[in-house]
Image (cartoon, rainbow, N blue to C red; front, side):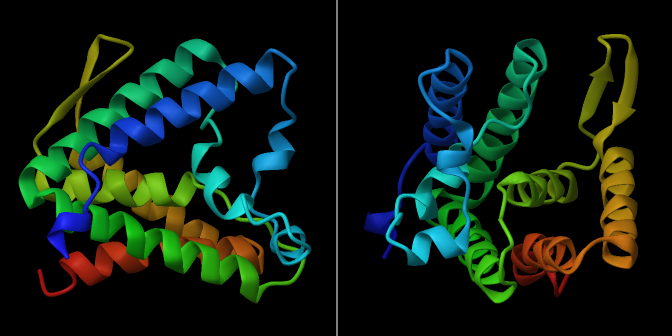
Length: 182
């Protein structure tokens, strides 16, 4: 199945998010038309199954560039480490579980936030000593940021709504599938 893998899929996601960002903030597109809302998918708006992947992570353009850069850096590193097929499989599993979870809870909407979080956690697991400079000054190893993410996911599991809890579980399902025995 390796021949069906999409090379540079992270770049495609980042470019899609950038285009959706431009269209939504120029007033040409309502961002809610791209959200994964299962009731609307069942009503015939099937494009939502794909477009929710392209919803921009933040509204501030400067912060969006940093998020896109980090996502591209981490996704490309994972693709280089695992190969294109295995990285595509990692994303596909996370995508499928996220879509399945969104259909479990009626009236819920899914987001790509937790799928991006699983890429971050996988990167941090493989490269724990990678250093990010917070505000270009403070060096922080990514393993500590991943620990904060794990604590945040634990908190959301304890206090979040059912859709949030299931989306957290969906997010870590592909991580556990790929790193469970480690």
